[in-house]
Image (cartoon, rainbow, N blue to C red; front, side, top):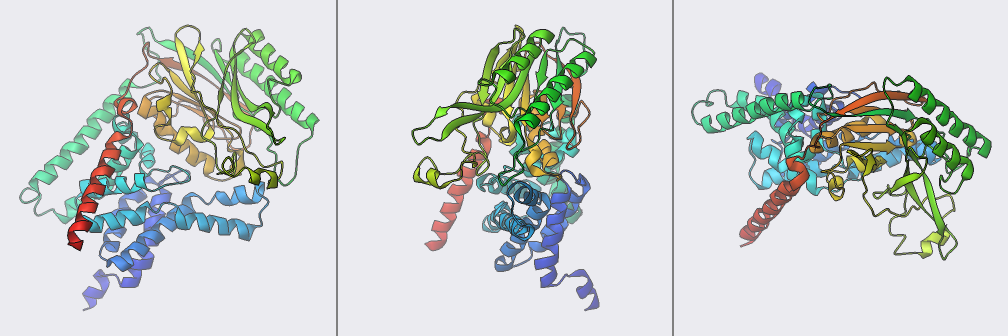
Length: 525
């Protein structure tokens, strides 16, 4: 009896304590905690929760999701207080509301495991998790597999099956030790086929990962590669708060001149002849095209230094019929001749930050909103920008670098590298910028293209085509620059993921739905 009490946790422990600890295991593995080993404790708590009856298991998995969200998305409080003007209690309530309804994929996962027959097989557990993860809508497309950036050798297969496939890989890896221990007496008997298949899978991950880490590096080689010298500028431009603390025109002009000065310093101190200078999203507080005092110095910087310059600002295109301005979040590109080479208008806008949902359908709401509320128009084109005759780069603005599959509309087969300009200043001194970096990193492996990430305020850096950081990382709220050189192959790589995208998981969802419907129908009959 005593032994039973010691070895078998009570129902309340399984329903309350285990979910809390499981949620902690998840968020501790992500930026900026980076305690990846915590994930290998996760199956211990999950297996305990799986012993619960369904009426208790689903709330337990929901509680795990809530704890995960509170730990991973607590930065929402800083946005709500610093830039939304909300009192702290209201901001904390907003965090809790978000935590309650985000990542419900954990609950769906628990249901699917039960419906398709509870199993301890890591492959089945991981497959059902991926279906639940993809079906669940999320405000921020957060994927479990992004935590594998702490174990880059297992990260490399993202060029085959994308970030969702990494979630499968990670779920298999953390469950495998527990499965081997539970079946240790039958590994070479009843579980022989399953054991061998899992060993082959892990062996493939290790072999492929080590090969890819050697192949996709930024090291200089003797194979006639292309090189691009980059000066990345972190602007630390002050943000306009909707409820006050607006900067004067003179203060904004001083910020702009400071950016010109630090750009010239970066170019002077680069070890090579700079090809591209990158300013972040929102670095310029004036519309570049319509303000001569801004356009002329930027054009002169490009022409004098003989570099291309990418700079982000608002683009005003005129007034609508109701008198409100129509504008875009735009990245302008100046050529070495000092002319506008092209521009990229942001396509994926952040709800309530850059646009008001359904406003186009209910236009009368626009008259009720304060003039300070942002409602950008969406861009439509997905261009590439050339550097010389044989190098092209692909632009992404902010949130777009964390959306799996978004790059499919670009001519990514011709792109040599990615430039992401971001304004993470809205998140305050929180972990959000680090989490954003982690969620963006996987794009470099999915498409095997280095990424230049220029942020208004940390974490700015360069990442190679294997997901490695190849520059220093800037701190939050500092004005500084990073100089680096990209060593690129003559022909941009084309990955399997870039061809097939997320179709494998869509097929998995389809078959899961078919078998689910068949099971429901059979039970009713």
